[in-house]
Length: 191
Image (cartoon, rainbow, N blue to C red):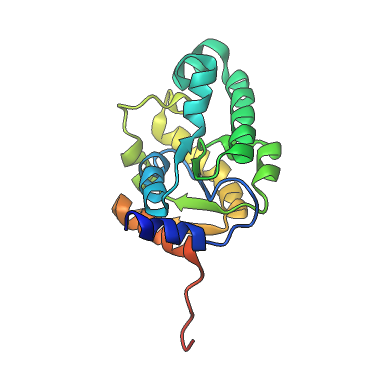
């Protein structure tokens, strides 16, 4: 759907609080960077990724921040970027996979429309690949990815208002599913 239809859907979608229409969370390889722009286009709003904001602030790629400044410095920049985006962005917001580890960020996401793009280990491992810099996966990437998933899964599940499984699905199908859920609840059987 494009044009005025998408605008109408976005306008009809219930909003809990000022800020993003939807906040995408999930592990590396969940599809936030791919599904986010598709979802934003369907809803007639903008898409913003906090990692892009962090890179703009730091003047260097996320991978370089980890290597040169350390994870603590990255997480501080990430915490600030998430807070700014939640306060000012009214479209679709994509968070880095580890942003949800911060208790302050978790609090900011409470009462927001958080969409968890759920991905199994096999699909995430395949999607992450080795052609994209993933600072936290240096060393044994499969073992580190499994560890990250185990650590973050309970947080993703706790924060999610909407959960969409991404394994074996095309990005546009996932975006359509999320958009439909944002537009409103589907009637149950017999309704």
